[in-house]
Length: 127
Image (tube, rainbow, N blue to C red):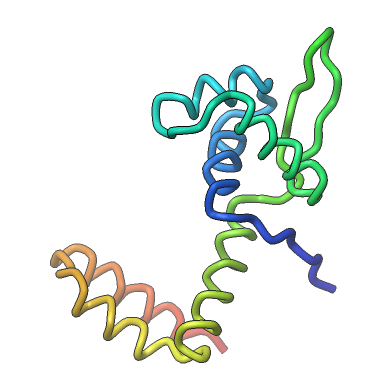
């Protein structure tokens, strides 16, 4: 049975990325990581951290006078679920129109095209 993943907002993704990159991590360390790359004040970041705890995306344990935060869901499973949701929502689950659109939006390098070919070859060989 596949576990139900929490719905993570665009802003919360930024917080999750900081936590996935360096955990366990304190609230002040999360703020330090996000302040240079986001317009959010520390209180806003802490609000998002608390929301992620409430959603079950991250957990915490007390360490001294501070909390240490850690992910309860992996980046890979969240990325996979978000990709599936996007594909279903925008393209009705059809991958060919999505890839076609991506090729029109931005040119792919020769290396990226070779990587895609390799992925398709591997997928085509699976039973």
